[in-house]
Each structure stands twice: as C-alpha cells, then as structure tokens.
Length: 420
Image (cartoon, rainbow, N blue to C red; front, top):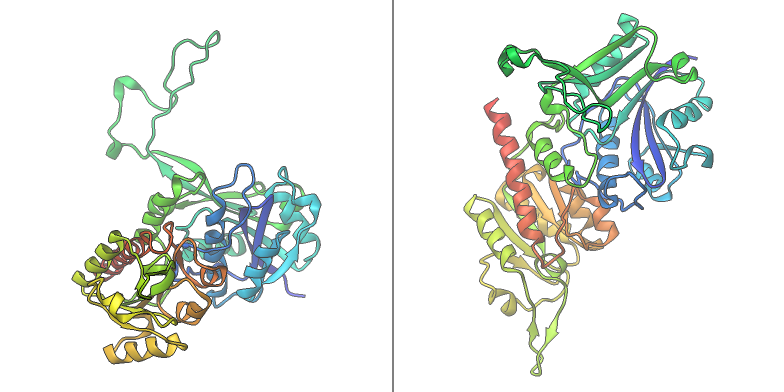
C-alpha cells in the first residue's frame, strides 16, 4: 500500500481537540472566510477561545482541505457530535476519538498517536493549528516538499520578531533587569537588526517514526519562516477582531479572483427587524427597526451596492414603505432563490457579486448560492451553518450595519488584489 502524507488540523474545541487529516499536499482557503468565520456553537472548555466562534476555525480548514486538487481523503477526529455533523456536511470522514484522548489534559500528540494507530498507511503528519487563520496553502506545500524531497524528519513554523528581551525581576532573587539580546550602549535601529526567530505554533510537520517516539520535533529538523502578516494567532477573545481584519487583508481566498459585491439581498423579518410584529386596534401592522441598519443600507447604496428586501411573509408594503429605505422589495415569496436569481439576471451579475443576509430555513438555499453570506447572531441554526459570516448583532439590532462593514472590508481586499 502506498504511503501517505496526512495533514492534521487541530481544533481547541469542547473538552478536547479535534483533528482534520487529509492526504496530499496542503490546501487552499475558501472565499467565505469569517464566521469566517463559521458557525457551530460549541461548549467552551477551560483555556479555549470563545465557543461561538470555534466553528469559524473548523469552517476554514475543512474548506481548505477540500479545495486542494491533491487531496484524497479528509478525516476529522473528534468526540463531539456537532463537530462530526459539520465535518460530514463538508464530505469529511470522521474518526471518533476515545475518551482517553478527549480529556482537558489531553495533548495534540495524544490524539495524533491514536489516529495513527488506526491508519498504518500514514507516514507523515502535519499538525495545523486552526487558530492561525492567515496560513496560506503555498506555505504548507513547501513544508511538505521539505520533508518529502529534502529528507527532513520534522519542520515547524516560525516568524521573525524585532523585540528586545529583558530578564525578569524577581524579589529576593534578581532585583534589577538585564538585557538578553541587545547591548543598550549600542542599541540598533530596527532596520539595522535582523531580529530573532520565534516559534509561532501555526503548524508542525513530522514523520511517523518521530511521533511514535513521542515527539513532534526532532531528528533532522528545519524551521519554515512565515511572513509576519500571515502569522496571526487567536488565543483569547480580543484576538478575534484583529484576526478578522488581518484575514481580510492578508488571508488566502482561493485561486478564483474575488468579485466586487453589487447586490445585497436582506430578509425582512429577523434581519431588518427583530421579528416582532405589533398590531394596532385598527389591525394595522407595526414593526420596528434600528437606525444603525438604515445607515448601513444608506452607506451601501452610496458605495454603489444595490440593496433589496425579501420576505416569505405577507408583510405590509405600506408599512415597509413608511420606513423610507428606498429599497425594492418582494413579499409573500415561497421561493426566495428564484426571486434572487431573477434580480441577479436583471442586473447582469454573477452569483459571486451577490450578498445575502438571512436568518431562516427559507433563506438556506440563497445563503449557499451567493458569493457572500451572513446571518444575525440570533438566526436559526440552519441559516448559521450555511453562511460565511455570523454577525455579533441580532436581527433588527444592527446586524445589517455590521454585515455592511464586513462587505466594505472585503471590498478593500478586492481592491488590494486588483492593485497587486
């Protein structure tokens, strides 16, 4: 049987880690990044990043694994039912981890060794941290070549930092600090100093025999220096907004060129409004919306993006018109995809140029079809699993404005790509 290279993607989710493994050289990132970034809501374990966004990581690397033309099999190792369901939705095979390697104290190495016990055909393993969202497939391909063609036993990622280090002051032991990597009398300028290499934890590649000895690093070792802008790590909650901005600017969005969004379609009930309907004594329908969302719609239109509204409910067009949003709308629609497709053709757009914000099961097909999809924080699970971006705001409480900002950031990425 031919020997194989496996790339294992580690997720710090639930009470353990999950692994995505696949054959061949590593991969590409799908253009629907941020939920990137992704959506399964998972219980939070000690030391893990916020549970709502753990699905963002899984979304990234599953899409990435399946877009690699050299990929043959994708395996997800997990003890969590919801992670298993998401993995299968992407077409991955699932290895159910035993309770022995699913403890809070379990390490990545424990899970990798268990997987290898079931897969004798694997001889190279790549442990990829899903909390490194700016990782590019070309980096992983080069690392795989270093092991296959240059004979290295293990390769790990580093980044170059220009940081001066000082010894720690400890009362009763060390009362003054001392320089560790500089001479203060000859303090160099940044541009005159090469800096130092720091292990950034983005990935670890190693041959099977090394892992079976209990090591991810050893033998004939080499490092792979990542570009500083690609070295992004999500460790705590406050890292998320920084990572999202960095991914939009420096992340990998696949071989297909990004398209500029020209049309945003938004579900009315649950996106424009919070879903609450008030009925007056004379049977007139009363709804409310957030002024922030109205401003978001106005900003989109000023940027040349058409905004249209849709609903499966027989909403009062008179009530909606009174909001003075100046948006074309269709109500009482049972087949939303057909209407959006009609609008798309009317404007001469491809699906990549259409964005959709939805919150219900009836929005699922549209969310899956468009180039950019989003859902409010309180959208149903079906909608959240179908989208590329989950808002922090609820429907009718700023979700449209937030999604508009996300569109603007993506458009900046498009413009940067065009300039390059």
